[in-house]
Image 1 (cartoon, rainbow, N blue to C red):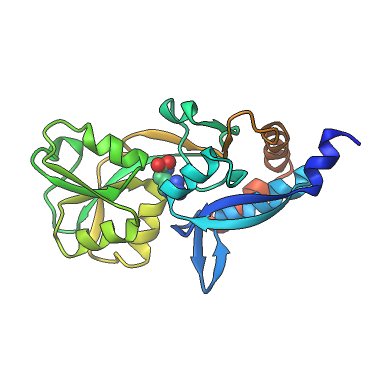
Image 2 (cartoon, rainbow, N blue to C red):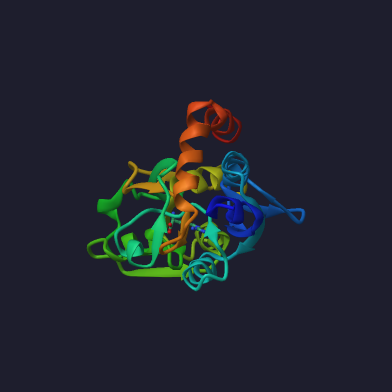
Length: 228
Ligand code: ARG
């Protein structure tokens, strides 16, 4: 028996997030989203058995580091600091951060954020980014991004900064007519699967990512979730 055979027999615990639409989310007790379906395709290609474990982002990060779960696919932005803690797969999604503000707000972009209060998700790349904006008054972090959007809707904060595609989703599901994006995409980011350092699965996963991109599966899923 080879190492590959052993790995194929193990049921991997794969962390996802409960509220990161449209990538991974829980609805009616079911795990749904672009990443849930992408992972399905990747795991099939790599011949990996798995069970999904929905968690909040900070728990997800700790669980992967501690080896309590094997992998996580949850819109995890690749960055230098995180490379100290995890190994990343090849990236599978190019995106960035945007500013979301009230429909009637005078805020037009990053330069208008001096003395403003920003809400975002604790521990996210947006949280770090917002804290670095010159003259910012306060950054409020919430473990669930829906709370940040609520704060924006009831005008307790001036803006939300968060991942572009999740913001688009909120604009269409809850924020209709109340919010608008201010300015350009701020921070180029890409998402990848994370695993514990020295994970033996990343090589096979990268191969499988390459395959599902090449055979058109990725494009089909992208079209389904992001409209082509
Ligand atoms: N892309 C952002 C980051 O990596 C936000 C991710 C939100 N949720 C998550 N489970 N990673 O911080």
